[in-house]
Amino acid sequence: MMATVAHPVGHEPVTPLRSLPHRVYRHRLPTRLWHWSNVVALLVMLTSGLMIFNAHPRLYWGDHGANADRAWLEIGPTPGGAHLVLFGSVDVPTGGVLGRWKDANGVEQTRAFPYWATIPSGYSLAAARRWHLSVAWIFATLTFGYLLLSAANRHIRRDLLPTRGELKPSYLWQDVKDHLRLRFHPTDGTAHYNILQKLTYGLVLFVLLPGIVLTGLTMSPAFNAAWPWMLDLFGGRQSARSLHFIFATGLVGFILIHVLLVILAGPINEIRSMLTGWFHVHRVEEGAA
Image (cartoon, rainbow, N blue to C red; front, side):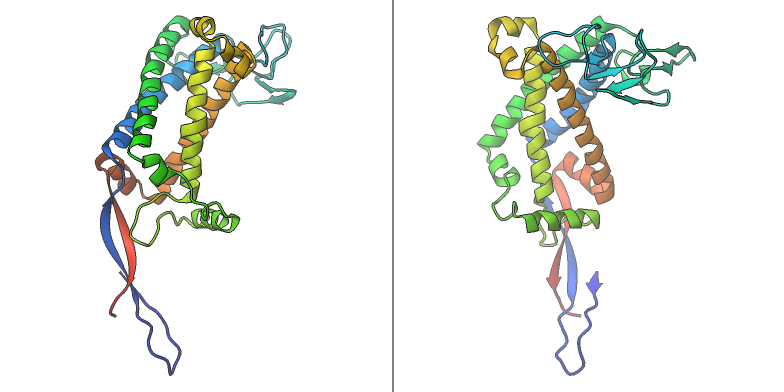
């Protein structure tokens, strides 16, 4: 693909630019395996977690929480009112999706999350806990192993840590503008992460994922007995439950944005690189007309 470059009358013509396609090895095997394992593990944990939340669809701060206590978030009708989602003192209607919905047989239900968003689809707290805890151990082990390996092979230092220049406001703002213009890939023939990717992946790897794992452990009676200081660290069992929900919500937000950007950036190239490791890029160079 050749770029036409205009030049003033009486001046030497400017050498045109050409785009040279080639491919680079972007994702190592451990990254690809961890990525696709997480797709399955997170799907199971999030949907089973919603069923666990259905058993008591209220969130509190502190050590204790029950129906008579003030919740900062609750979903579904309560004996004293008809609200569907109450966020603090703000009542939010949900249009028949959350709080009150119809099941596959057309029967109206009043649980927080609908059957099509939970594992299992029929109400069962015991089954949801078995799914959630079984996969959670696999997820935690894979995440811890991935972080150790990424530190050992310098993936974190080489690819994820921002440089001082990338953290400058002008650089950050330029990357924001490039994303708004749907310009996602560099033109120097590389496939390195941009600064928004680095900051987002850093948030996921070092805040959201560890936060989900640690708050989940804090809610376990066995770990409370072994490490009682974790309850103090997160401000009590109910605070840990609230933070667990917040971290999970942040992860869902990341997944939705991630999928959207993959679609906008070219889903075939992006998904192929996560399957094979090879990413197709274009390098802009000067060339003959």
